[in-house]
Image (cartoon, rainbow, N blue to C red; front, top):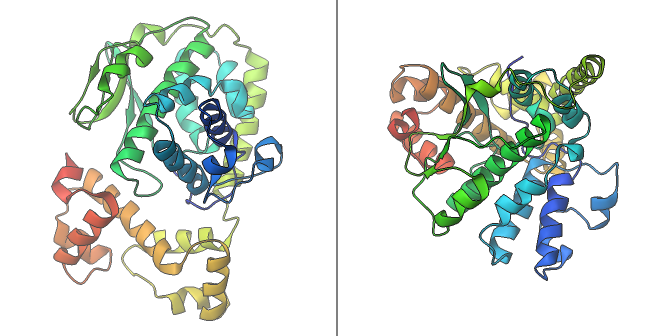
Length: 341
């Protein structure tokens, strides 16, 4: 099964990432209430083993951290504190796997269990193994939030690899698709390698000689058991647990048809009014889901086909290519050619 991103408002994740950010800000004298403002996550949720949150709520807390913290290293610090033991079954699946090659593979396969705001891929080459972070996010974050999420993710990946390996493996280099930020000088300190900006893709590159190394906690029986549990959890998170997910899946399955809200309501055996009310209760709207589907499909077509913008616009239900280009700019902040590179 190809990894996918969740819908923004799916509340299926324990708040462990949010908790780490709140803890770091608390050390800076910032109250948990201020950190959580606007997220609908409570301080009590952070110590509740059964509390569930969404990617959107996590992103709200990240935005709060960006505006409240005076420390430009907060994303790197958070990544270094997000130990695998905080990730439940997912963490144990990675720690017990039988080789670092398995670690890379499983980290991608089970990523949907980790409150993922962005996609991640890995590729094995003749001399290197590369983590790649495509410009595909759950929502359309600001430049500052994009950089924060990438910084945190790079730090997390380095932390997790070292925990699985039981020793310090330093990346050969780290590449970033954006220009150097004001705090670019701290990147090598936290990542431990040369950092290159303005590159074609965000990538974290290692020597591939590490791939056959055996993790220090590798255990064949435990690995088999927890990986089976992860497979079951992935299956559960992919099921349409709420109405917005069902609407999303219907729209994705009919990319060239652009069914109306009336049509979707009939397919779900409910009135338009009931559909609208239930979507509002889930914190979204029909148009927001349509835009989410169109954005996801547009990025897929641009990156995997040679179709021109007029063809993609028609396939996604736009009246003309100009309207599609304006929507693409609104969703991603980039033009079609820029996204295709």
